[in-house]
Length: 83
Image (cartoon, rainbow, N blue to C red; front, top):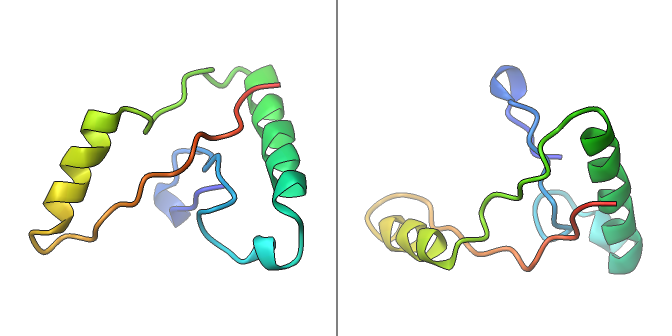
């Protein structure tokens, strides 16, 4: 889950490639299954089914901006989303 402390809006990070080191302890397939399970719970409780951050043009724009003093963004592989 993405985190933002007091400013978190509850978005999930749908990739085992972002944050933490769980990949050092669990196989990627297990992590992806857990992500799907948590995502499914969010959807069951009314979260939108839309996945953000997959538009290639938006990603390229963010990456370009990263070269002007801002942190660069690396695209996340297709996230495991849904039930």
